[in-house]
Amino acid sequence: MLEKIKHDRHVSWWAEFGDTLVVGGTGKSLALTGIPLTSKYEPLTARDLSIVIAGHQNTLPDSVQILARGGRTSLIIKNPAVFTDDHILIQDFKPNTVYAQSGEHNAHSIILTMNQALNAQSAMDDVDAVRWFSDVGTLSNWNRHVSSVDIVSARDWIQEQFLKLAPTSRSLQKFNVRGRDAWNVIATFDAGPTSDVYVIGGHYDSISEQISQSAPGAEDNASGAAGVIELARVFSSRQNKATLIFVAFSGEEEGLVGSKAYVINLPQDIKSRIKSVLTMDMIGYSKDDSEDVLLETASKFKPLSDQYAAAARLVPGLRYFTTFNPFGSDHMPFIDADIPAILTIDNDWGDYPTYHRTGDTIDKVSRDMGLAILKMNAATLAVLTGS
Ligand SMILES: [Zn+2]
Picture 1 (cartoon, rainbow, N blue to C red):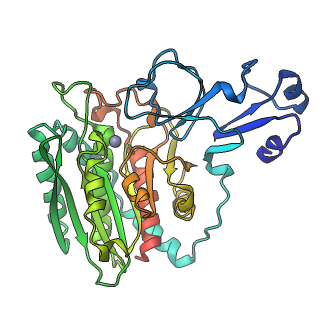
Picture 2 (picture 1 turned 135 degrees about the vertical axis):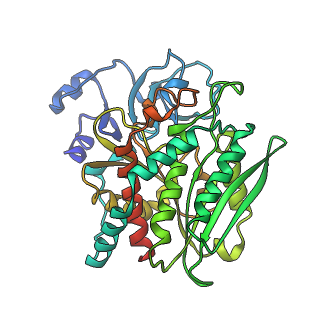
């Protein structure tokens, strides 16, 4: 149906945004298609539109008119307002483009073997939502702005959680954010010198309106950092054929400083063995009763998002969307270094009311949402690592 509408001769251009297909043409021509249109903006043309990537609604000026949103991409009417937030990227609108695709329209060809499906199921069963949620609470009790004193306590606590799992090695990777020390927390479960390597990461630093205000960052990103710890627990007790490296990044909110430092300092031996990287940023918010996840990577790494899509289908009730406009989180330094990496993020993140605010507290985090994404990620890792 979607493809038929796109190719209808009365449609002059189209753009796909998850659940919404935007079509262009004159009112007269579109009426001839018989498509039930939900809104009309005449006489707008494709040239009157722009794309905003990662434009969280809270950070957009009030004058901005959003026509459609899908993934972390919004289609807006061109606006002369000055966009000052560095978490925003503006691009020209390209007609006839899939900006985000819902799972129902995403063709992929991954079929799991019986053994893979069983492994995936047992990994999913091992995810403990209560434990994860409790960890989100623990982390969000600390002000985790990179310049805060408390972030050191969060760092040490994450290290302790890793230590309990008896990894082969663990380390703190120190780097510099505007003259201050910051640390990535790393735990490695080594499966031997020639094994494949998978990296699982998420940032534990946070940000709020002002440096004087606490940054509890429950959704952004205690949810993802606790997710890294939870997946480390799940996989530390499995027979991994691959080496797993779990990283809690810092400095993400200051410009992906921690993940950039991690990628730059990767030893060539490890780098060449990395098969893929999973990052989690904001995995615990749902604006409604349904669980939706966004899978974000570069188009050249579509085979990786297909793997996650196949696993998403194993999680009851989980809808997924895919997008190939990666932006603004810890997957980027890997993608820029040509390492296959994917961001998993709840699909309602753009509606999160207390994004980057001191009110980003545990009461806004949904245990069911986090559980659904963690199950999908656990299932995918079980399939990829053959564990
Ligand atoms: Zn974040």
